[in-house]
Image (cartoon, rainbow, N blue to C red; front, side):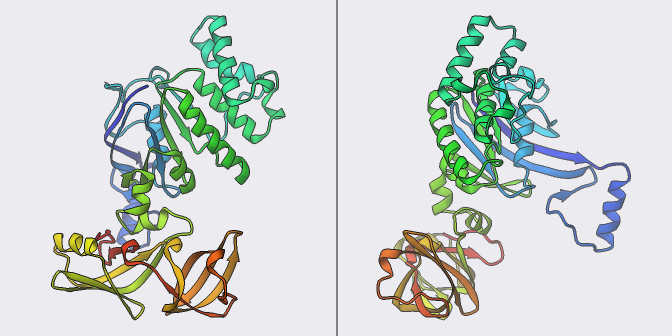
Length: 393
């Protein structure tokens, strides 16, 4: 029930005594850094120039590889990490110096963080008792949250008697009984097995429609991000790479990193390709084959005055089809996944993955070592500048 604004947020972890000189010596000696985060005289910059406006009741997902700064950003919103620079607003009020308990937020942790000596009911009651709420209201809130999450029958048990999924429900229940303005969730499903993760994702989607709060959710799992978020914030090395709806980041990735991170299996990238301009018409040369671009793509490239250049062509596995004509390839691995076949192919020394419906395989030999040909439609390919890695379309 709140708007959240992060304006030019920055987080710097100061060097330990003597660490700055050590880092400087390494740089002077030309030693390769093992981390991608920016190292300055002040310290390691974990989050840089982070700007995000979250609407009331919006579900925002921060996603990215380990160490990209997403959990640090969440902890700054919670007040568990100090903000080095920039401003955080919740409902128009600046929160930089407000204590965590006074921010009207609740947080669900990856490790559940339940009190082992308390029953489920006592765990869920605890934050309300700290607020000195009337016993009747406490009971009503806990009973309602337990019913919503399907854990009523476990209220008298202790956490050790519950499964991982049940414990996570209790942790979520303890957060929502507070009726917070903002609910923060830090990789809450990463400790669960695949089946439970799918089930809990569905539970969170249902829960979202039943409680009036703003969600900020952190995950490294792009499937979670795509299924849960109204908008996704993709991070890398402390910087935002792209903000958009799941469909926007899937269909129109801003750069090579986003394209490779979003989508399973990962997008295929054809290095050594070339974009050729002839007047206002363009075509790409991929593995010895010319593919004419569509009128819409031509117009987009011409509007940016894009000239002929070397590019990286991207094509999603689901957009690649087998045919009698096309690019020659050899099957390296063939994975039957029920209704579809995942084909790992070698084409001109490059690895290519195609996801082909089993209904389209009749009469085709896709055994390991067999020769095949594949195509992908021009309207669904992506063009990335070789130098900047930005999407040209």
